[in-house]
Image 1 (cartoon, rainbow over the protein chains, first blue to last red):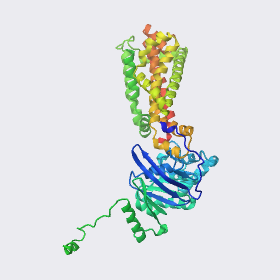
Image 2 (image 1 turned 45 degrees about the vertical axis):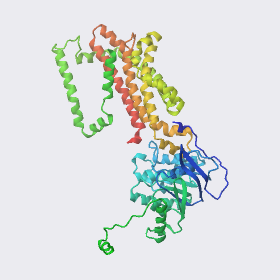
Image 3 (image 1 turned 30 degrees about the vertical axis):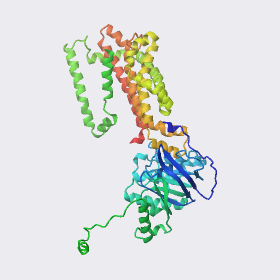
Image 4 (image 1 turned 60 degrees about the horizontal axis):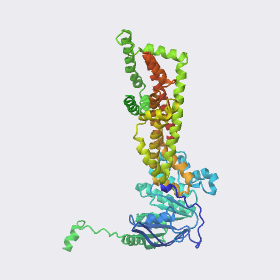
Length: 270
Length: 276
């Protein structure tokens, strides 16, 4: 298990060239073997900004997130991050042998807040509505609850950039809506920047200030959504047109009309 | 001959009903649990009747009442306690050595690529060797004192513990380790919070297997020219056709095996509460 040996980039001071940005990615490229996964990516994330990174499966969006999370080694000049980052993954990835509040507290083990880590963990678990599950084992939780613990674990260190790697894709539709509301609530309260990796266009449209589409390793398009989140009904003309543009950028064609749907109109046309 | 016997016994030991199932059944239906005692009691009663009637020769096997009386005598004059203590000591020392070696090797092989290459191939070759077959070599190397007995027990303990602990370490979900890395946990923190608890369930399986093997090895080891211990007591009784003493010795062996098994089961229940 060679991956155990590499020590994490703990609190490493990197050259801060753009203090007004939380993350600054410049001409970042990555390849595995002969496969080019990311091609010269440029991306800025401002403090408190909610960015959604959209793309098809295998387009490299998770790779970009791993670069930002420093889970993989990348050249320092290509990816700069100011302040703490934390990640919530697609699966909750809790330690099943540690109780819920200990799981959250572990994220503070190497921070100055180490001394009060259990209190802070309990406080954050309260924020995600799990006050009654503090001492539970992770295997006793439902999928949605486990994902909320994972969110609390990412939030407890008070990151300036929260990286979300498709954290809602394995949840049922109703739980997902609840989680969307929770994330927005937490984002407003903590005012950290969020980078949400997803392949769900509607999710991205409902949550983000800015949508970025990654296609074949390149950052292809970007959309700013100025509408308040409460006004982002799918029928809203601006939302509907942006949705169509994004789907086109992702290479999804609109569903053709059903010719059997209206036989009278069909006859008229004939 | 002794090899066949021990493998058969080992198989029997490994096929025991899971303790949780037994307990659950006991809690739900106390009557049914009692009912399970009926047939063993009947068998012993029939055995006693046949012995009393003279159908079963005392030189073949003593009667249950005779065995019980001998057990009481052996406890009273201190023989049984003293010999048991010697045997328990042998298992304890041999187990401690074998367990240490097995665990250290498994951790080194599990955590480093070089360690794996250096340790795993020879271990995989050696594990196919029936360790009881090493008795002649051990006698040539170490004589017939305590050393070959301890070495044999240590040898039997090392492999199940090594193999299971290594499998436990390799079985840990890489994603969990990555999550620990994303939380900036250091190497030693990842060992403590992820690797050790993650490998523990499988390591405990290895512990149970190796304890079973430790007792079996003891029985065989004590037949090589021991001057004390349960095996000595049994061999001595054989020379005088004392089948009652032999059965008492065997019963103590199985009680000791059951007792260590119960200890491990207790450990498992405490350490693996999170799996409930």
